Image 1: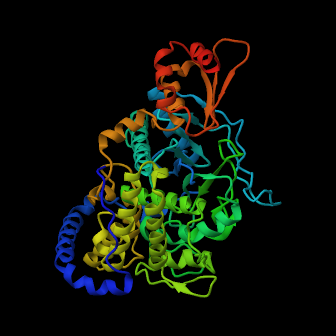
Image 2: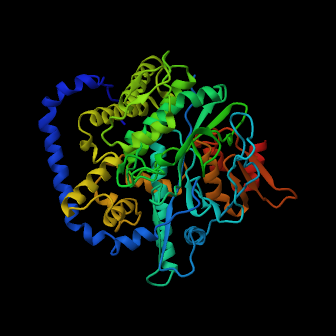
Image 3: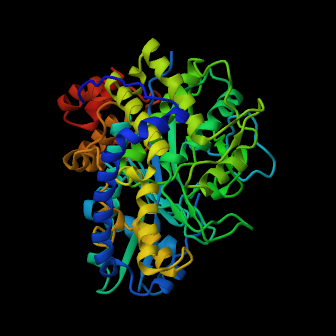
Length: 66
Length: 495
């Protein structure tokens, strides 16, 4: 890994609110992309999910663990 | 100075035999591991001589405390990558080789997943059509049963254990805000069930300090079994962690904990001791609140949120890095990466947690569960949501929901592939793994701190490995390339 400069966090928690507005466009852009990807996954999730969810969940019992 | 942080991670996997008649979890786990090992045809037995899991770091053994039993009759093998692969109680367990940096540890943890995937495939080739053994990388069955993902850290014996326990506890309680794997359904007795939790494991901790791992689990485990020179070393055995699929989460879980332990060894945790007044209650409450607003009370009477406590530790670690450097975590570069990623997740958890859906397990799962409930108009108590939670952790590539979430990775898949076969070059696991590759027929048994050879003499020859950072490629790589037989190796080692 290339050396990277250590950046100090911009502000502690209470002041973080102020910087939030500036970053809002990028954050929401990324948020939209994540949401779109999640929607695509939900469209196809029924093909992947176990057929009988109730039985599958009931049968999943794991005893004797640390 | 802080000791180089030799690191390890061991995972008990959930296991389900599908349509296999008369199956129980123990036989299914044995079948799974046997299927893999017999395809490799390289099984070497584990040597139990030095195992003493009942020894307590506080210097005593409690009457009535239940020390873990070591089972000798079940499948138990050592792999050429230096890992131990075996049946622990009713679960298949992959205990990775000793690693010298967090990135290396993530690589070997991922190699473990690949080994379990190949084991499932090997079992499918033997079982009749329609039967299958399926493996899950999680820590709870949703019915009050948990199984662990334990970490190990080499710590200087000079640090008094009570101090170690007192100061490490607050970190182990609060780190779940980035190491949690997420869970639908609370398993704490008497609590409301239908809720999303940050951590798979938190519900199962009932004590602050103790030796147990299967009941009344303690936040700080006192097992005192260094698998190394006991005069110099301690192996801190951490049992609070969730098994992560996200590489970022595993990297931070181990990287940040190693940093905190370095600070502890060098007395750099500041004059204000971060000690929680009620750690057991705190570990539960943090897990129950994905908004991260839980208020934690400290013994000095002040209060903090888990994020504020993690920021305090971050600031101390940064100061430590500037003053003393972070080479003990593998390299300065990797130390800087741990700090940078730690800062990044804390900032994002503060301002926009959902933005971490491609980095942290619990956030990825939380977003998925919420979106599913919204689309289907169902609640967290719906069976389909419970199924979705379990299938996040399904290791079958075609069934894994984690696999479909496109979570960011840190490690090149080619490196993971090498780690399935080759040991880490920078710890004693190199000697163990390379000896197995070259001389398996002459190795009777191996364990963390020794290898036993049978080279046709009257007595078996035990090679002790009490120093975790000896037996590396730099130490013995040339020697191993020069010798042509195990007898020659032993002669050169003793000569």
